[in-house]
Image 1: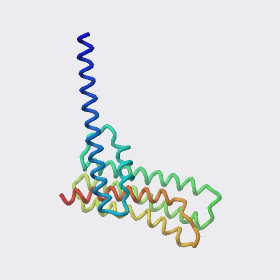
Image 2: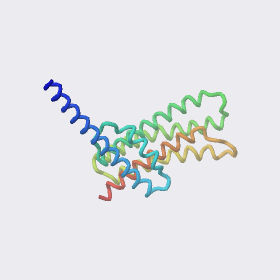
Image 3: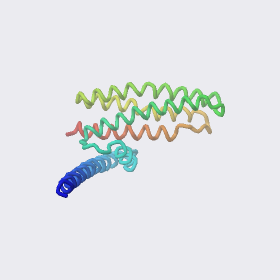
Image 4: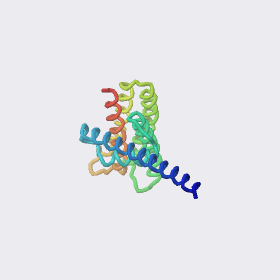
Length: 183
């Protein structure tokens, strides 16, 4: 019976430590997202928290690690958008104009991926100014993609949601990089 009691104490201690680590991470995420969304009216607090909490489970984090997570999420998102575009280009429902816009968006997102990877390298080298420039450059892919569809009256972008998510992820990275740069 004594063995079981010692084992139980170890498990309970582990669970308490594990729970407090996660709570600490969630607190940091919520606080960081609150500050970021207050500084940028285009950034959704709820989106920021849900994106980061879903990808930071079980990690003890600091703000630098949140930047790395957000940049990696943004690279993965750009890759997924390119996959979506490839599928949409095969859809016969889109006319020539829409397909040209989709090809343009594909080029933008293809270029954004190495730009974001460069931002990550710059950030990890503590070159926050360069990281900021690279993320800002990549962020333009979403608005430029949307603008392409607006050139034809009545044309609706099939990537509106994807472009918004990409923009938000970049905004998160920028806000966190700028916070670290000001420290």
